[in-house]
Amino acid sequence: MKGKILVLSLAILALSIAGSATTLSYFTDADSSTANFTVGKVKIRTIATSIGRWENETQMSDADLITNSSGYSTYLQEKCSNMLGEVDKPAVCNRYIFVQNTGTVAAYVRVKVQIPINDYYNKIRIKYGGSKEYDVTEPNFGDPVNCASGGGLCFEYVFTRFQPLQPGTMTTNPSLTAMTYSGVAQTNTTDDGEEGSSGGADLSTNGIRVYTQAIQAQGFSSATEAFSQYK
Image (cartoon, rainbow, N blue to C red; front, top):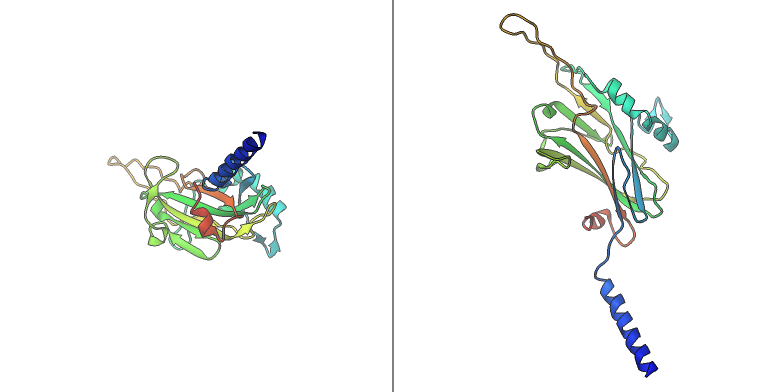
């Protein structure tokens, strides 16, 4: 009798294991430039800096970039607000975005940049990875999506790193390198001759959002396949 019970128990256990294979759950992580989110062993950190990997012909280490990121909020306030662009020389706000794998397993990562659709943002250009530069209104951004920050539509650009990012390492090249404002500040007067006020663009708190996402590399043949499972 005990033998029959043991055989039945093993059969039930085998069915349970076989059934679990159809309900796999992948470890993922998501991050913004202000907070960390951890799921399982996949953990990433977004690092925003005012400098790139190379400055004045000197290569910046991961430690250099992390140190710079600690003062990035001050840089935004001092350099990226009240920006007065010129017709042939737009104002530049550096926003180098690096991703660091602080977890224990290799992960595929991607960065999403969302830009609200309105007349103000039409004067902004975005530069990615040092190789691509787009006007916000260019079709390269694809169809508008709902803004993740809530309300309205955004253009969204997605930068995917196709090689797994190993634990403890940072991306070598930034996915987002700069935002430029090409509008020129103007003044006007009221009907009674009183001069109005004007100011430059504010790219420090402008609604442009950067999101980074990661998913475990193990079990997938490519980043494309991995992110097709991202929830």
